[in-house]
Amino acid sequence: MVTNNTFANTFPADAANPFQQYVGEPAALRTPAEDWRRVTTQMQPFWQTRVPMSGLGDRLRARYMLSAPAMAETPGMQPTFSQYLGDYIQDPTTAPQYGAPTIQDLYARAREAAQAAAIAPNLYMTQGIEGLTAPEMRRRAWLSSQFGANAPGAAANQLRVANMLALQRGQGQGAYSGRIADAVRGAMQNMYQQRINRGNPRQNFLNWYLDQVNQSA
Image (cartoon, rainbow, N blue to C red; front, side, top):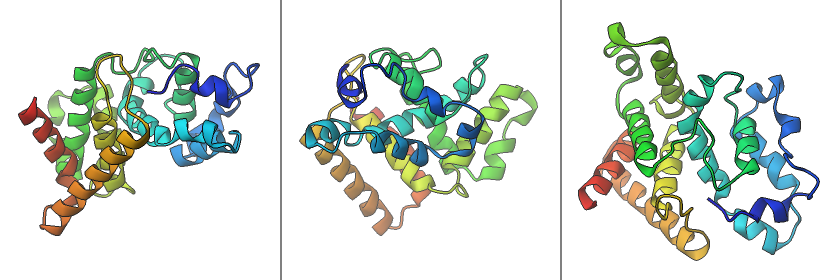
């Protein structure tokens, strides 16, 4: 994640939670891209402000997509991106209660997303359905809507998650930024395109990436 003062330097000091005004019933109808545009329109037009935020939107969107099912099961919680941003800004150094507490948990959630992407949606939703609980069914439905073969932007969402994982510095150490982050994202895009050029299916990219990480661990 970003340093503690990134948001403090971006938004007015008296705005303890500038996203609170966006949390509510209409938030459920907005996309993460729309919510992030609301963030960037509040930023001062100086590179000192905008550069630290480069790539942050995609990383937070990736984490949100993996966290939304847990948000939905948290009492009183709205599983929206604006809600996630509001919780994040309160303390960027601490994961919300519904967040993945460890790197291992984060990778486990990413593996679930990869399965939703790689398996045909109908099969993914019905596989082992007899033993599934209602929250598990809702989690599958969400992941299929974000990563499944028929999901809008599914390939881009896989790339977001892969980039987010590749940029992690380690447990509690935040994420790489700047030129290193640009290099990582560029390398990930090249790997993705090379696999497509070789005839590999788009929906298997995140699964493939996680397998490479396991092999190199």
